Length: 525
Image 1 (tube, rainbow, N blue to C red):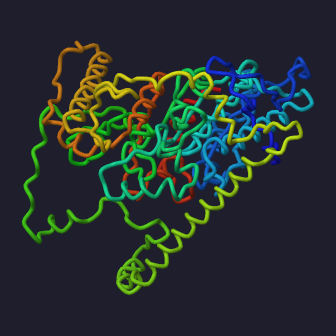
Image 2 (image 1 turned 120 degrees about the vertical axis):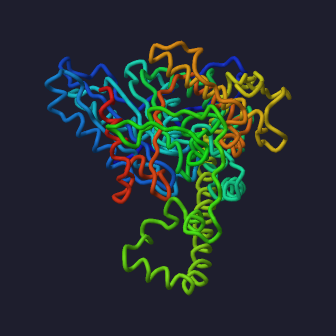
């Protein structure tokens, strides 16, 4: 599939900044004109799928095929509904995902609009509805694409229906009080180029100097307003076990009650038809008594050190008897192989990041030698326009469950290092649990005031190691939750990382089949 050139950005800029009250200008769209359609043109519901970091369209082959099986062409013809058409974005594969959410979205939007034109070519078919599905980083790219379509007036003629994300870092990647998280927080922005900076919200996008993810979550911007037009906004998040995208960011929450779900006494109820979907969770009303430690060197003592999930990647998880051969040779192989693997990984990350920054520099410089003497619209100035309506205002303040925060030094439950205080975390989790219990009792026709409410001590385990969210991430969570996302929590155990299985990304990651069945059966055509 060919894509439109990126010389002219889909969100264009003027060379001058007209001021904070300026509005977005009309931008010419490559979509085919609507007046060429025949009166009996076939109505089309077009679904765009966007893959994640280091991704490939093949990552989404199972989920896209599952949707096509749910709505075969014959079913749409009989019911009079639009026919389903699917496009899996190809323009941003592999190392191009290093180039940032914005550049990735520009590529995907060009590809999508080009495909719309091809679908409507000849007037036999007409795109009347559109839905977008994003996986991991693809969910952020999809939200930026929605801003582009909103800016162009695309949704004035095409009805936005469903927006879904799977394991998407909506508020960026949070930092946890662990060694692994600290290393990732330090090296991620350096090794992942522009995308890494945006993941950790340390970029300065546009004239406001604010991170892109904060701008995308601002209710006054085209990204938010475009997403608001969708009839349904739904997310699927791994409650635990996702090493890549933790629960708080994929579920757009500020606290994580599942961080120690195996020991903090939380009660989980699963859907009998979809066994990996959590239908109810309940924190204890009283502190969980610590277990009596087993005798030293007993079987229970030794087994307590055994990991609860596989430590090795799937291609190194051998079956009997080869697993014993591998374990026997490991003391000899690890000192030799481990340094080689570490060097190879470091080289891959650093070289891909350098390649990305060179590519971005070329894209930003492209067209700077315009014949009229003015710099043509390029990425380096594109953010200015989308921030015009925001640039004259202060950073929005937020009233959260844990306190009030603003850009002007208001009090916050976090310390100077960004780590939540124990009391603030416990207090917020108490309110979270109380609200969940009240909703459950109301649904069962009981008095919402009845029932136990956890106290601070009962939640000590749950609040002990909470994510160290920044104020930007907290504001993003509060604003995005204003959109009323429908949230589904997934728990896939027995795997090293549940990030891939949630969408059955590869042949060996089919654990999430029931999750995709739940999604496809509820998709609204």
